[in-house]
Image (cartoon, rainbow, N blue to C red; front, side):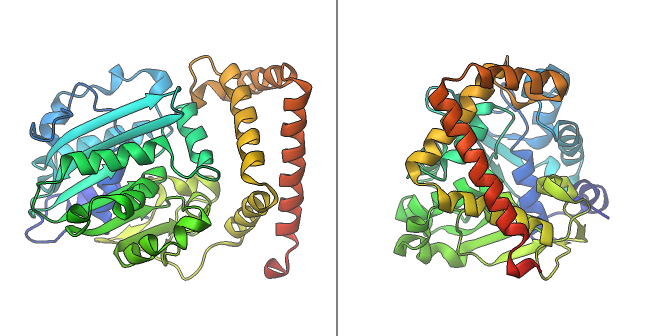
Length: 364
């Protein structure tokens, strides 16, 4: 079935004046946010260049192997198709920011796009290949605010206070969470100009956030999309009504944007999520219910102590294959008895949650 690259090949010659901005355009810009544009696009919002110009300055071969995420090859193809299309090639972009900080346990990136309809679209990057980015995702379960949420809020408040035009925010995965958080917390003068927020399989928030008046007030502006086997997009709470998108694959790879099916300028949707995705989500939510905030933090810190010791470049890609598994086992053996206890106790609870989810009445 067709995906976002097919959309660019088939409909990339149609300008926004003929076919207005749609949900597929939003996902394309959010996926575009994963591309490493350091030294190609300025951090200054006033220094704009077109996507075509940015592509002419971009060389995918110069991106280090350790910084290439699983969709790297497809992202490079997406960039080329965007640059050579009438719809996106002349679109102005600016305000590229990319920060990864082990000291802050934070990974953040954003870029601002100017569709030719007079609006602004801010795309927040989801989790990249860095270990610190993955750790920050899990921190959402036990902290009030993450470093990337605060950076996202600063990005909007510092760049858009005086800009008088419609604003859209969006992001895939963690980027969707950042977009929703920013909508809820940004300055009121900016919030009043935000027309909608696109969250593509983005994780939710702690219960106290979802139940707050501030969050309830922004729900009508949130457009949430998840694949039929979603795991990431159903972590924690959201309160949003999800549009469930048909997928061309099964399992965790449904999270990747390139596997989301579409027809013309809209997603192909289904009525309900898959049974396998439901089991995984019940397992994870059961584990979260069993742990208090301190236990969650101790477990996450212990796991990432192991991973950071195992990965030479602090990147998920370092842990692939037999060599990666061997390195992880070696690091586990180096943990103190207390740390090993935290790790194995947590794994037992996760196993019990998984067993309970598989045999729950809802899935009989």
